[in-house]
Length: 463
Image 1 (tube, rainbow, N blue to C red):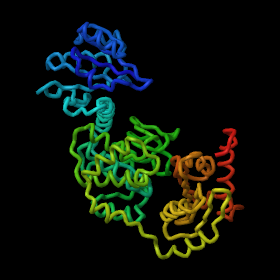
Image 2 (image 1 turned 60 degrees about the vertical axis):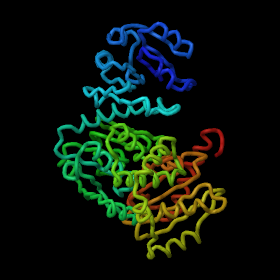
Image 3 (image 1 turned 30 degrees about the horizontal axis):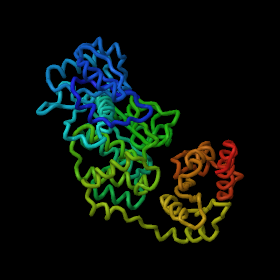
Image 4 (image 1 turned 180 degrees about the vertical axis):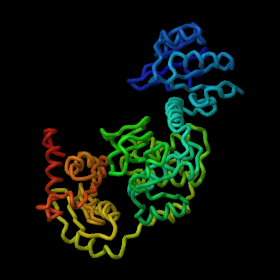
């Protein structure tokens, strides 16, 4: 990665961390020889030339992956330099460090991220510069959606807090309302806490049928990708997701970040880069989305998730969060839970529990979380049947093989399967299970163990 600093003053050099990461190359472009000599002593490479001339930026071969920082306190010089950079590289990622009383360049408001020196804390300039990348992506997103009368914000078939919050955030970023940007799903919200979320935060989710997608001018997928369920189109206009990329994912623009713990984190970064205010309602939704997908920052979490969480925490309505976050176990499934725990099978440090017929499938991940807390359990594999489908949830502590990879290897050929390192899920229509495999718990155990141990042996070691 290359940091390109365009300036005639020392300030940007002082604000950058003096010890860059090993893979970061720093280049100073200046018209001041004394500053170039000083920068070289700080480990910069340097090039001199006219900062308002495109020839300089062609000579150093500016690319879309460069992080460019401009500090040119004279307004006319800044405007001419921006014009020169963007003529050479229209997709450049640019941060402008403003001078005293200098206004952000309005002509490039969608492409350039502007900051004042007083906003820069110790070691934070590089983090702020990353927002320029987000600002550039946001500009692309808006251009993809521009001109559409009706936009579909499509979430999973059983919408969860992360997807719902991401859809609300995208609607805000696009400056639309529920009439022009519809949140839709091919399923329905089932879990009690998710139902409470949409009721208390006034989120309307339209239940879609096959063929309804054609009525929309643009389709955006939030927290989901093509082929996740039969109704989702193979090609869409926009994908924003944190799950591992599916090979079938096709979109005019896709922002897929598997390392992130939640799509709500990605959307929070977009909101911060946009400069738009984050309402209390939206902050509450996004905070709950991060909380549920990372198990309160305890699973599949990155520093970006922690940063987004801390930002949203100060803005959210915590009284509402307490009312939303009260999961209830249905009385009708208590007997199934008792049978599952009584008949649970242990294989080394793995626990397998099959609950049989259930009133709601959402109790399966609930019990998988519970089972992982049992003594000596490193993997919990819990399953149940609801609405003609076999649901399997897997939990582990994230220290060994990826749960998502194992589940895909074991069950993707029968239905949808995948997930993250510490949590994964498969949903299989009963008519897709081989007819000779009537003993569902044995079929699940055998396929899962084969997939898990093949992965272990393929690496030449066991987890």
